[in-house]
Image 1 (cartoon, protein in one colour):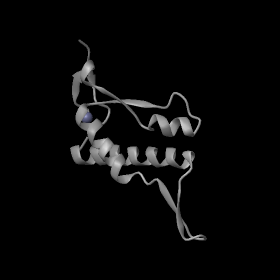
Image 2 (cartoon, rainbow, N blue to C red):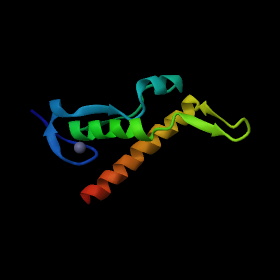
Image 3 (cartoon, rainbow, N blue to C red):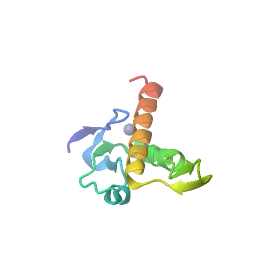
Image 4 (cartoon, helix red, strand yellow):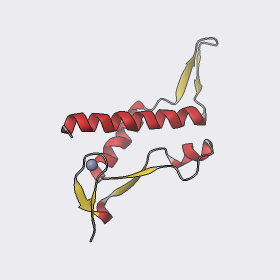
Length: 99
Ligand SMILES: [Zn+2]
């Protein structure tokens, strides 16, 4: 049984307990024409936490000043959005855990 490390909090777990997390969800990556999008190995806690962050922090709409309406972001904009939220999550964990 190989020991592995969560790439966010640094805790060590056996390989079968690590969750392969896609930074950009498959449907978004496919929509943006990206194949083989980056994945990271996370512990179940961090995996759940980052999913909660995505649910709360990923903004799927832009406000258009001209039409004064919200419109859906393009797949490329959504990719940036997910990457940004993931980066913020990693920074938050490092500060919270002082690592
Ligand atoms: Zn973790």
